[in-house]
Amino acid sequence: MFQSFEAQSNPDQGPARLDDLRAQMLAAGVDAFVVPRADAHQGEYVAARDARLRWLTGFSGSAGFCLVLQDRAGVFIDGRYRVQVLAEVAALFHAGPLARGATGRLAERGAPCRRCAGL
Image 1 (cartoon, rainbow, N blue to C red):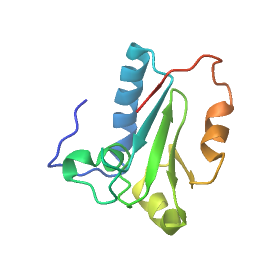
Image 2 (cartoon, one colour):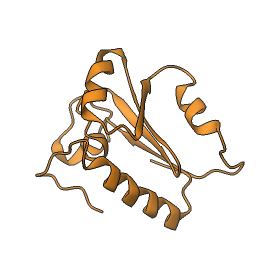
Image 3 (tube, rainbow, N blue to C red):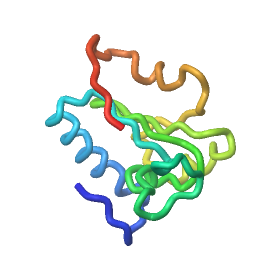
């Protein structure tokens, strides 16, 4: 499971890539994984090599992140992208706002008491 810098993503590729990520998470003992839109410098405009969110989910907007758990995943975006995220991301990803508490509500149901998260 490696990101290709030449190939862009689309909603059809998301489910297989999500399954691969979850398998890697399970093997490493990671309960949750955050996939940011920003690069290592928190820049809004990222190089193709840093387009992790787009590679995993297909979302190409300039603000957002994905939270992946073993049984669910969500793409969290700001209000500018409400229509775009539905067109670019597979339905198995919950699409939600970057509102306070939104990620916690996704993660809290059935989450283990001891958690290990990756970024």
